[in-house]
Image (cartoon, rainbow, N blue to C red; front, side, top):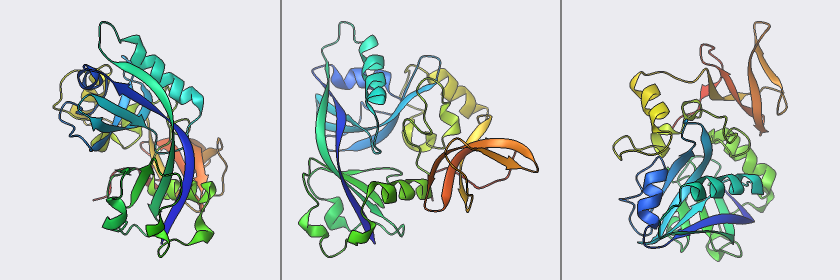
Length: 271
C-alpha cells in the first residue's frame, strides 16, 4: 500500500557559479561529485559539530541546487539553515533564497519499493533512507494520476505520514534534531549523510573523531514498539530514567535512550 500526502513547503535554493564549490565546503556529504538530477542526504553542522539541520540536496543544474526537507518543518529550521550558510558566504558567487514548492510525499507502508514508474516521475526524489520505499515528488500540485490504482485514500493525512516516519526511524528537524544541540552520531544517519573521503567541512572534527574511535553519543535514537508515552515523556527501565520520547505515531515512539540500555531498535539504514 502507498501513502500519498500533498503539502506546500519551503525549500532553499543555492545558485551561482560558486554554488557547488561552496555547498561542498559547508555540507557533510560529497556535493562536488553530485550529478545533475541526483540527490543525497547531508548534515549541515556548526563548527563545533552540532547539527543545524538534516537536508536533502538536489543538483538541479551544474550551478544550481535545492536544499529540501523531507518532513514538515517550521520557519525556524529554514531560518537556521539560511543563517548558517549565509554566515560564511564571503567573496562567493552564490545566491541563497527561500522558495515555496508543492510536494507529494509517497511512502510504502509495507517496506516494498515504490513502483519504478512512480520513482521515475518528473520531480521525484529519493528520500528518508533512499531505499526505494519513500519518495517526494517536488513541484507536483496534485497527486499524480499514475497513483489512482495503488493509493488507499483512507491512509492519507499528516498523522499517517508521521506514523510512517516513526516506524522507519527517520529523524525530523525540530523533533529529533534540535538545531545547535544534537550530536550527529546520536541520530543513526551518518552512513547515509556523511562522506568520509570528501575533505574538510565545518564540524568534521567531531564526526571523524567519533567514527574513528567507534564511539557513539551518550544517547542514541531508538524505535520502541508498544510504548504508551507522549512527546517529552521520560523513558524508564528498572525504575530509572534512561531516555526521552521525541515523536509518537502508529503505536510506536521514537526516542533517545542511554547507549548502554538494550531497549528498542537502534535507528540505522536497513540492509
